[in-house]
Length: 448
Image 1 (tube, rainbow, N blue to C red):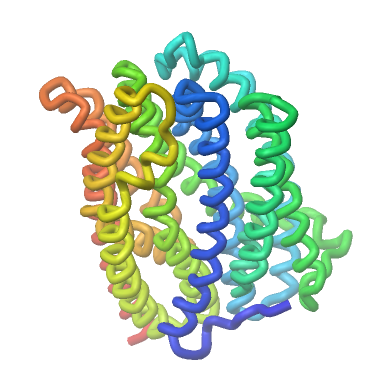
Image 2: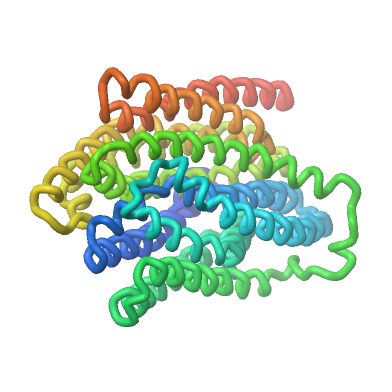
C-alpha cells in the first residue's frame, strides 16, 4: 500500500507523478462513459443519445454533490496526515462515514422524487422524456455505489495514493463495457441497462479502493472513533457544504443552458450532447491536477510548510497551462471525427449534428487554458481549508452562464449557448486569482 508524504521532495515530481495515475483513471472513466453513449447511440439510435444529453447537467449535479462531499472531507484527512496526527485522522474518517451515509440517503430520495419536475423544467421533448427518466431513475437508485467509490478514492488521494484509484477505475471501465454489451446488446434492457451497468461497475471499483484502505497501518478504526467529538461534524460539513453549493450552482447554470438547448432541433441537442460527452476528455488532466493540488496543499498546510506551498502553486500552474495547450490542439485536430462517433441515423441529421458538435468543440478547445487555471487555483484554496471563495467563484460562474444562455442567446442564437461555458470560466478565474493572491499574502506574513 503506497502512500506519499508530499511535505518532502521535489514539487515538480510529486505533483506530476501524483497526477499521472489520476489522468489515466480519468481516461478509463471516460472510456466507460463514452462506451455508454456509443452503445446507446449505435444500438438505440440518435433519439436515445439526445435523451441522455437532455438531462446531462442534472446527472452531473447529483454526482458532483457526492464528489464534493467526499473531496471536502478529504481536505481534513490530508491536513491531519500532513500534521502526523493519526489519532485525529481516524476520528475524522469515522465521523465522515456517518455523514456520508446520511447524505446519500437524502440525496437518493431527493433526486428520484424530483425527476418528473426536472425533466419538465428542462423542456425535454416528449418523444425522449421517458428514456431520460428511465436512465436517471436507475442511475440515481445506485447512488450509494457512487458514494462508496468517490469516498474511498478521495481518502486514498489525501494520503498521497493515486495509483489505487487508477486500478479501481480500470476495473470499473472493463466491467462497465462488458455489462453494457450484455445488458443493452444481448439482453435488450434498453437505456436502463446502461444505467445499471454503470452502477455495478462503480460498486466494484469502490470495493477495490476499500480493500486498499484496509491495508494502511495507521488507519484502523475502533468503536471509540465514532463517538461524538464536539465540533468535528460541523467542521467536516463546513468544508463540504461550500463545495456542494459551488457544484450545485455550476450545475444549475448548466441545467438552465440545457433547457435552452432543448428548445432547438434534435440535431443541435445531439451535437451539443456529443461534445459534452467529450468535455471530460478535455478536462481530464485539469481534474487530475486539481486533486494533486488539494493533496499537496492540504498536507503542506497541515505541516505549516508555507514556502513549499508557494512553490507548488507555480509548478501546478505551469504544468496545467502546458497540458491544456497540448490537449486543446489535439482536440481541434480530431474533434470532428471524435464527436462523429456518437452520431448515427439519417445522414443529413448526422451531418447537421456534427457541425454543431465541432463548432462547440473548437470553442472549448481554444479556450482550454482558462479552465485549467481555474482547476488549479480552486484546488489550491480548497487544500488550505478555504472552500468559501471557491464557492463564490461558483456563483460567478452561475451568473455568467445563465446571462449568456438567457439573454445573449436572444441576439446571437445558439452560439451563445456554446460561449456560455468559456465566459463562465473567465468569471470564476477572476474571483479565484484575487482570492489566491490574498491567501498567499497572508501566508507570507506567517513566514515572516
